Image 1 (cartoon, rainbow, N blue to C red):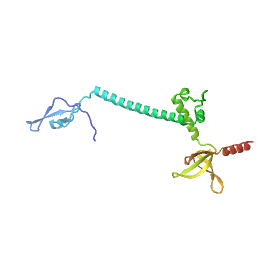
Image 2: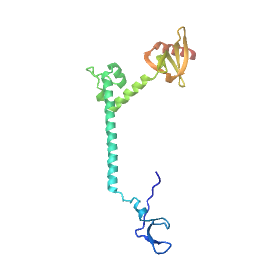
Image 3: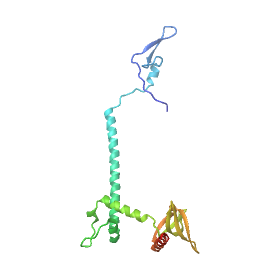
Image 4: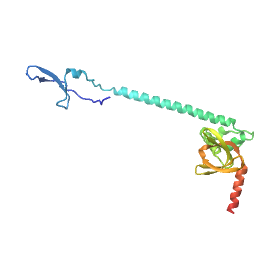
Length: 209
């Protein structure tokens, strides 16, 4: 599509005499130009410019902005309800002992927990998120699976994070071997071996003596 321009044509035409001086043609000059002119045929091919209805433009812009804002509010409100309901579900299904650790609260004289009295919804959601992130973090002694091509390749015990590589203790079928692979290849199984962390801590302490 070619570039479009707005031009202003003079109201009154002028007559261009023919070479014989007897016939003439009425032409309309474009304001600001000497040689840019239109005859009746050319003038009828132009699209007249009409002043925009500024009030209508403002109304349409307002309506569009209002609809966008309303949609964003409704989506945000709905997402907020989903997050709050998920937090309430986690509270109701989490064992009391674990919930006391997450929210740092104690039971009352009747053995009841009142997290909704102690915290706002945002505070509860933040505490749940922090707890989940802490428990997703792989720690020394955690059993992990190494995933290759979407399949479990092997299992190991996490020992150390070495700049993006996990050093893990693998059982090769005949012996234990410590190998390092990119941490993206590992995920927790949920099992943990306190003995590994205890042994490593004891060995480090003996070496520091």
